[in-house]
Length: 295
Image (cartoon, rainbow, N blue to C red; front, side, top):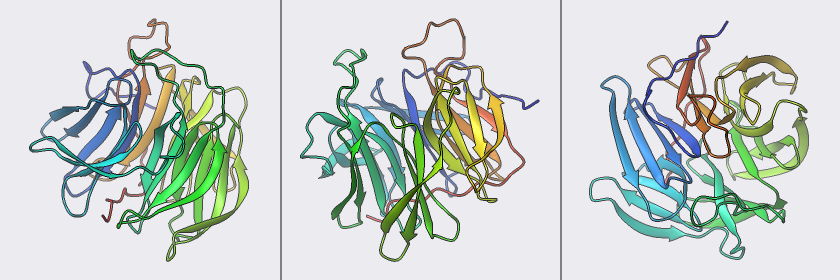
């Protein structure tokens, strides 16, 4: 039986998301989308930093030039953690004003991939019904050039790349599918999407992490578990969790074998005391690293 740890026992997020492990700083970054907060936690010293924002924030990733790139409700911005100054960068989905940022990851070449969805969060954090598949998937290069790769997405979730750089994985929760694309790492072009996996009965597909064996660990929103898929898209194992809505995961820790899992308390009954907590499990398997934004 896998031991589930709760490294920050007092912290709860309304909608924890976007975990990023910075190997150089040995620091975990993640956000609370509804709570409009970003976090930076250094496990070795147990130092936790919290940064508030005026807008929904779905991702925070380090920049190679220093500071962070954050995905806010309707734009991307540079963020200086010292003076907490925001500098607008680009708005990849500016033509879809009903949308908000959701999924985001940086590919191994330092390009930022930004997935959106119809905004389902009201001004007071309340649920808003999704009535349109208006989400998009965009690539943002270091110079701010935006390239759109997909539209008509329900809820964008999961962005991963294979170790050899020839495959990209991206999913749509409302379509209940994760697709695998042919990927050209030199140009950043994704093409030829094919079904990778689709699972009924264990919640909805949310964020994912990849390990060094090419297996994908997928958080199952509403399913109280993480599913590990083999490179063919078949289920390898299911790890039950003490939360209703695990949202995403990332590998980190000194040996890159710790899987950190974010979760959401929003929309739950509150009967489970760990709803919205940051969880971790020791997998014994080395995970793929995260990458800083090149811009």
